[in-house]
Image 1 (cartoon, rainbow, N blue to C red):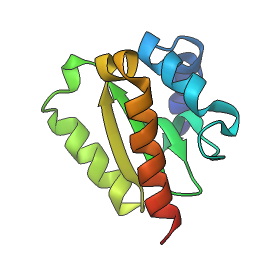
Image 2: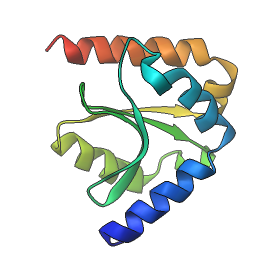
Image 3: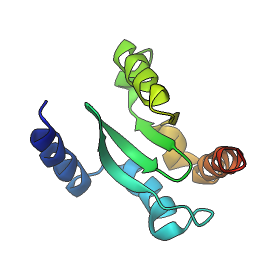
Length: 116
């Protein structure tokens, strides 16, 4: 997918988030989580990351059941890792049922990455 098409697709994804993406965005937006600046649906190379904090090189993905055991996600995560990013993955149900645990895990990893 070309860069312009990727950006257009990311913009469309921002307009129509899943329920879990919406809930997580409410936790992350406006520096609400540990003062970190997250962006959502961000084109990075040939991929679009759900949520990205560039300062601590952290990507947060919210996944539906179609992602379980996905080889494409493994390749994608390796690409992000090669760029210096760590990807945290949460399934939709976890975000919707236990947002505090998700927020806690993100804060923990962000703190670890900022301390480096």
